Length: 320
Image (cartoon, rainbow, N blue to C red):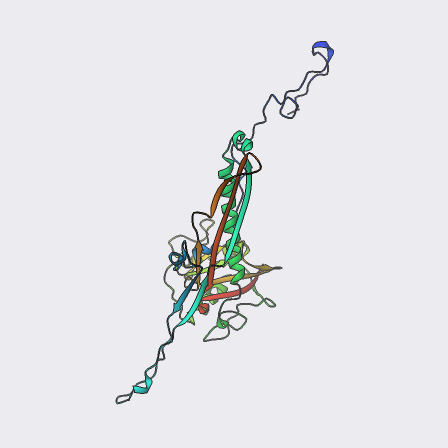
């Protein structure tokens, strides 16, 4: 459609017709903006799905650390009739792990009263919602980076497997190359790593966090048997990968990546514990002391700890 122009003649006094649009000095004709702010696409966060929060209540509102007592491992020996077992009595020793609430993320912004008044959308709510989503992404990323080498020695490297010692989880220098033809074999191998250290297989307890490039080759693989997805519908039914060999599969853009090498994380929910400390002061709205407006600031204080390294796998892969 041709743009509407104004005639240079015909106006009273022989001059050009004045403009009243939104870009003119008078601006009588308002510029109409969509009432829907352009939606931002936030990376999916996974920590809430793969970590346990068993100690959240212990630090909520007070305290900066929790001492987690781990069950002792008792020795099992053979017995013969008539054995004297007096010298066989052990003194169980419990080890501990320390969950420290020692990390924090924050945001802070200001909003002028005139902008808030004249806007046709609730700017403060929009900005706080945006900050909250970005906060969740930042926390998620920091934890995934922080635990990328926490797995037990038997659960990572080119010779993983507590029993077999021949399962290739990949290394930074020699990552395991995944394709649509071998990605399912890789997932089954990771399950075997956990099986060899007797990690439970109960529903919803095992997870695998993968890059979206890996999700794509899973969907292009021969994974057409519905039984592998854990339900009665093929995994190719929609955009969800679902469940494969007792792993709940999660896609994430927050996994550590070096060049073309991704750090895939797998394990059991008992491996990682997470807690966030929240009180009434973590989100504040304050009057701006220097302008007509409001100041808003927020903070999340949190901590995480790998408490069962043998229930976690760190694997390095490339995807093609």
